[in-house]
Length: 217
Image (cartoon, rainbow, N blue to C red; front, side, top):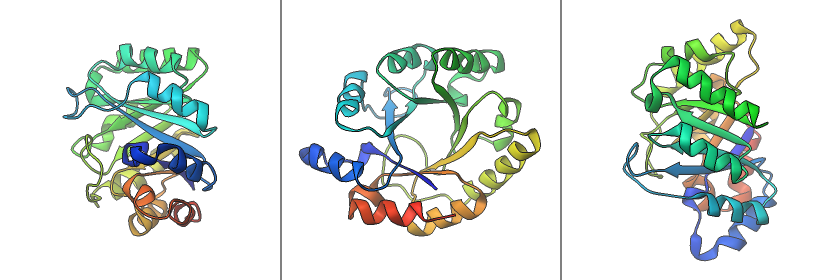
């Protein structure tokens, strides 16, 4: 299992120590939440913060942009060093434009992901099965950490995984929201490849929490 701890839940009074612990935890990725205060009701990180993390962590930079203009914002974070940029279908809602953003990200030599909120049907992703490297199922409403996992996400995960196999796609299925040892196991059983965890990792022993998720199959 790929584990992508969300630095939204980091204790910023102890940033370097927590990042050092994360670097040695067994996590492969670092999840970086970008919010614009418009698409979701919160403001978070700009590109300079991502650049700073890149200097102190070798982890793969998994950047999730929860913004109203992903075409514009994706350019900023490509330049800042994102390895993977995931944006929301609901922010664009146009198949041609969504595929064009994915092509632009790929042209920059990076990976592209597409996400949906809990209230968006998984069928919305079906036209894009061979256009993206990753699909992110939100298991809470995006905007704030610490929310409870929505069990309705599990059927979306299993359905999406089935479609990807049928389409011959190697795209990964990522889950974000309320992930812990118990819900992570349910996601793994449903077919998830990547687990995003914030509070579960940073509000407990970082290495122990990460390892408990890494071992899930």
